[in-house]
Length: 464
Image (cartoon, rainbow, N blue to C red):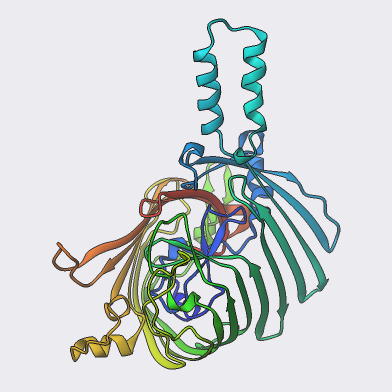
């Protein structure tokens, strides 16, 4: 079924979204905004771990990606590779390199075309363009396992066309029924519901979340601190989300999730063992999470409460004299709200044959703020327009051939828009995946977002 945990994860600052804007392959979603597309959620594997695996299947270990740069002459197309990865039993170090070829190719082409004769000095001048620092970006990351349940991760990266470094420090500790995470970044990159990026100078979070249980009850507690005003990243204007303004926030959330099969065809031994004239052989599903045809309904309801400490609730102009983006929205010192999602899933096929053995549709209706929805029903002027409208998330998956699956994630806003009447598409992501049987539920995914004009290749595990 579609990922219902997005409902509770979207309330906090630690939900990662796949993005080629950073070398670690992710940005954070803005808390309190409508739930992101399932296809936008970042892989559970670190980017260095992904590149270490993916380079085995790409020529020279080079993986392409697409993302608009801050300087247009650099071009959107980039190439990434893992340059170094020494490791021991409880420690590893990785170095990622990225290269944008468009500016280099254009500069060399111009150099050669302007030359009267192709002599040695011409080639020497053309070679100097390889020394342009804006073409290259590097990232260094290391992870140390302090114990079987505790690990420490530190990373830093430098974008060639930008000044300064992006740093991240994380401590992860696993308890029998809970996860505890300390996450600090300076600066941290966030992406809002419109696909715009915001850079917060300093972001620190301490979270404790319960693991999924058979009862369906889950809870999450967290303390978060923003320092410095958020800067528009690769954008000329816009209003910064209030959740990113300076301040200290304590937040708690709970949810109750339930699912029920309408019908399900269980996997049998006859499905796994195929008998032929040449003997019997084992044929498991390409993905263990897609091995049983079924129809199911599921849902999640929950609530959040938050307390803000700081000056972020002041009503200020959207651009200050220093050209620093701020917000016109007031941030309440104390707030509480409810959210919910309902999902219907239908799957045909067991995803084990070469053709026509997987067609799957997930339809999930999201309501990210019950209070805003209620205010809208009663026509209150204080209703938050972005949160008051329900959204319908549709996921369509179709087997192309063997382990290759085409997928479309779309989000429909069930509201009118300026110049448009009725529901309209708010976001969409197209992807093509190659499932890996040896990983049981792992796949290589190539996705593209027309809204963000971004695309990348990832390794995803136990996600669909």
